[in-house]
Length: 514
Image (cartoon, rainbow, N blue to C red; front, side, top):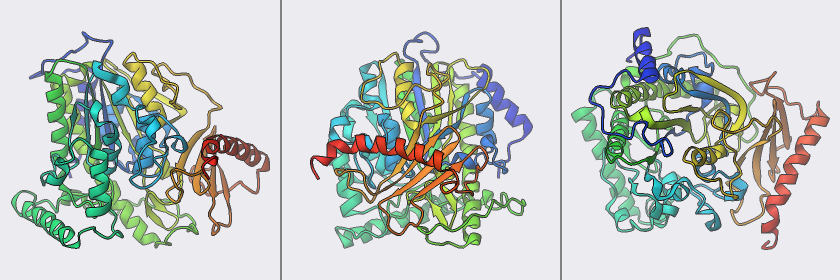
């Protein structure tokens, strides 16, 4: 592994602080158009804040991100609206709580009446608008407003394979094409049956042959990363991050303000760190707190979960290296001089209670708490925000940065440090409702409600869960080991009443139909 030295750390930090690495600077707006600064979002899929050394993780997983944070605003209690990609991403893009935007099923879409509430439509033609998601589900979400995106890359861009030619036939309806391809013809989920078994077999054989050939030709360090087996898009993280730089360089050369959103797949499962990372953290003595097996989990053995955690941490370290290289290049070219750079995730990852991954019914901190680091143009010192925030706050903050007004449908608030006020009594919600119809009242779901130091988890509609409510005091019990539901009846009653008041209100429009 390319371990970062103290000298490298200081080089990155000083470059970010002063923009001292300015050779070969690209033509840019720089600070001439402060009313419309560039806005860049780099989102890493399944990137848990609980696994970043920046947030106190015992392993040094993110030295480059740590260096970037020294001249950025760091949010320490930032939550996703959901525990998997569709719901988490839709919450960020719409600024809405999931029970409102209703992209609550795997690969689901935002309610048609709210499609106009997204950064591309609301920023408007004042910005050149760019979109790229390696993960097809966010690509599908953005396909709902493709007409407002000026450059919209396919998920296979910068991978080891070309975009599926069938998708290009439906360029004007990306959402429908994604559903047809990923849910029917070549289903992304492993337990789904392909609409065409022959075509499905030929497609998988073709992709695996590409990956094997690339391994022999140009990737001796290990097998290429492959997206979740249903998607079968082999890629190299170094190519993806080079692609990010290439696209930003092109946007910068056009000499107009731009909004660029990059949704990058790694470190999402399957965790396949490069060979030079495969011994990292071995025998380092770290062992997380053992937690009881959850009744809804698969009951995975602790040794297996620890092994998967090691692979995940190594994958994070590899991504951190690529991120560090990208930041150096962005500083060398002057791209960050008039740009807000936002680094975040759509959700986290879980390695506890008999479960590995995300998108299931477990709503504990590692899968909900995500990183949020924002560097403003010219920022020279670190600011730490410990107030509760949600990824529904990203959209109103972007609009504020761009000088646009917040629209009434948005639930989120402008982030503290960027013009927003801290509200200590604000509840923050996360929802997983994959078993509930998007068109019906929300009755079968797991909902997390965080307020001040307390967190309520409600299992609604699941008969096989003995304890419907879990209550934790995260200030004194950050590992969520002591369920206070039977010990603190006053707090439990107050939080339940507040949660159900919100649910009753959001369910009211759907009660007329059911």
